Image (cartoon, rainbow, N blue to C red; front, side):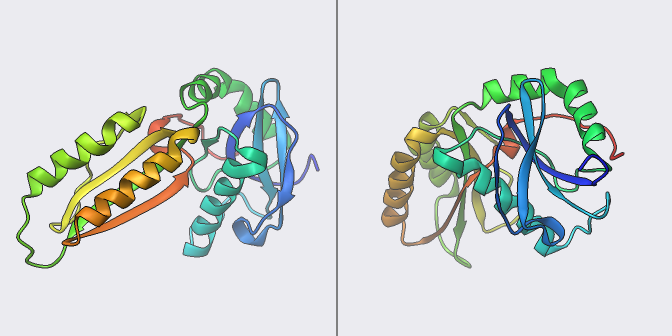
Length: 209
């Protein structure tokens, strides 16, 4: 196992976990590699430069979601797509160097998941865009521990936010989104998650080795 290249999905507090997956490059089994207080969830891989295909990026996210929901839920600090290492020793070296940052990030997002909300208008719809954004702020921001700013990359996009929400508050957040959608037939609401909290952690990892 020591000479096997590993693809890393995310980091949790130290724990031995393994389960079946449909992972990056067709991997079918995930397991953890530990270093002191941390464990990284990995799958075996035959390259340290996996292709960034739609299939692979989707598999990366789906494995993270499995870990996020594993056996009642785990707090996860996600790795960005493409973090592959030539062996377990190299991965453990990265965990050692970044342990303070991972530990801090795990503490900051403990018990939380990321939920995404997009609100779009129909073509040529007559809506008060600022009023919609203010309503979203009033309805949802206080339900979250942290909120990203709107990333409005389209003229039709009124709201595009991610929310860091306590796992136990997720059902109430789900209901609030449903009520908002019921109140606004003129809008298209896209609600996604739970995701690992990509938008609420910021850890720089060195180049693949």
